[in-house]
Image 1 (cartoon, rainbow, N blue to C red):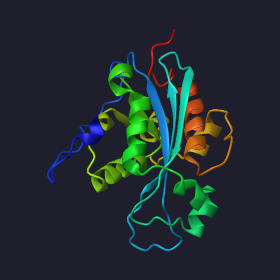
Image 2 (cartoon, helix red, strand yellow):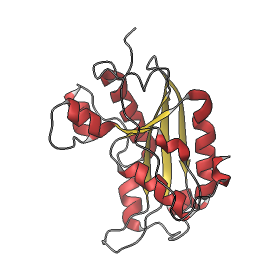
Image 3 (spheres, rainbow, N blue to C red):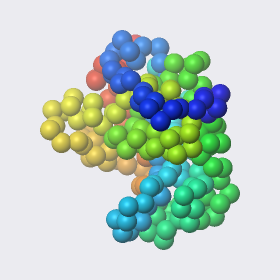
Length: 209
C-alpha cells in the first residue's frame, strides 16, 4: 500500500495536474473536503485532519458512492470547544475514530486510484495542503494526490472573477442552495458534487453525451 512507502526529507511534492477535457477523460471524480483541528485563538498550533468527507462521481456525472470518516488527531488530541461549535464534531466522535494512517488507507482503498483513474477535487487549496501536512507528520506517501484539481480556482477563472468565489456563492450563481450543516466535510463534499454536476459540461470538463 502507498501508506507503507516512506518519503525522504527532500522528497518532491506531487506534480501539478492540468485540468482539461483530455486529462479528465474516462476518469472518476473524487469531490472531497476536510475538517481539521482549530482554536479560537491564533496560537501557532499545527492542525490535523479530523474528518474526511468525499463523494465519487463518474464520467456520466452520476453520484455513485460516498465516504465519511472521523480521524483521531495525535498532536493535540483534545478537540477545542470552538472547534466543536464550528464543526459540530465532538470529542467522542474522534475518540472512537482511527488515527490518520488507518484513515488515509481506508480513504485510498475507497478511491481505488489505479482502477478508477481518479482525480481529486477540492474547493480551495487547503485540503490538498492539509493531506500533505498530515502525510508528512505520519511519514506517509500520497502519490495519488498528483491527480488533484482546485475546483474553486478553475470555477472562479471560468467566471472571470479576480477573487476566489466561495462554495455557497458559487452554488447561488448556478441556481442552487446549500443543503445540510456547514463546516462538515461530508456536507461540503455533497454540495460540491451537486455543483460539479451542473458546471462540469459548461466548463468542458467532461464530454457531453
